[in-house]
Image 1 (spheres, rainbow, N blue to C red):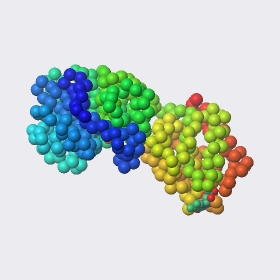
Image 2: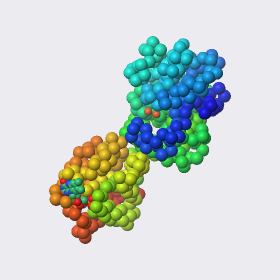
Image 3: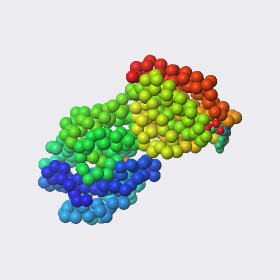
Image 4: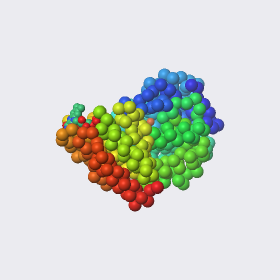
Length: 392
Ligand SMILES: Cc1cc2nc3c(=O)[nH]c(=O)nc-3n(C[C@H](O)[C@H](O)[C@H](O)COP(=O)(O)O)c2cc1C
Ligand SMILES: [Fe+2]
Ligand SMILES: [Fe+2]
């Protein structure tokens, strides 16, 4: 793909990775992704904002053909999907300086062997004048790594936000015109990458508030011509108040735990509590992560396997623990054969969650009327807790 103009003298470059299906060897990419870089050509200086994943280095360098000089390579984030082609750019433009936050410097040296003398560090709020365009750097730590910063082009009211506000979407369209589609993809991206840093994101959004922003151009996915759309979505996702929603990741080898899950889903529905169940052997874990953005209660449902939860359940519990959603309540249900430690194991695996634990419902073998009565009580108790917490 050729460079595409965003504004006068400001271009999108980079790669649309239609075929990639996994990120960080972990995150499913149902819609592919893109690595967006941007070129800002001032009267005196030219700046390249980020680069592309190393897999697209040749294509990226082809896009730069015809660009006589690059004075600054702004490295907003040291992760290789954005910084990976910096060494190639420096090779072709030996006078270019890499502009990075002070924390990014050591990461760029460690990850990409960039020579220290090539790196100029900028402080939070510092500006560079390109002639007609002023780049202001805004430290936005932890979106996605501790060194990350955004770049604001004052004259254009344009924010380059790197991973912040990004979405994994491959598209021939540059812009987020299909907001419903982009909302889902950006929410998935937030859930999988940003959610652990919810409280820090609040500070970062506050930091952006004084800026007049007409366009947000992230380093993955669509560019926002209506920035309020994605900023408002983030405000909702990071808010402390969950929705009246129960999320149930589960496995059932022989159907007993499944019967318990189905009974709980029906009972919660009767109580007007929204519920989502995820059968983990066939679930794209991104959809579970998305639902955890909103969930008030997590019910982990598992049979006992060698005294412990089924390994796929342990994996999902570990993921939920790492993603740090705002869930308020949690419990365990499931079937066992003779002796079990699933409740203790799940509590250990989710120890980072700040939740009130509700008594588990565990049943020996096939669930009968006594188990279903306990599950009804559980649904009742969850509904009461949600009401008391003011959720509807
Ligand atoms: C590989 C394997 C290991 C198991 N380990 C235990 C165990 O350590 N303790 C226990 O109480 N039941 C154990 N069970 C029995 C199951 O927990 C029991 O059959 C349960 O009802 C299965 O629930 P499900 O129908 O939802 O799969 C094991 C079953 C399998 C297949
Ligand atoms: Fe990243
Ligand atoms: Fe990224």
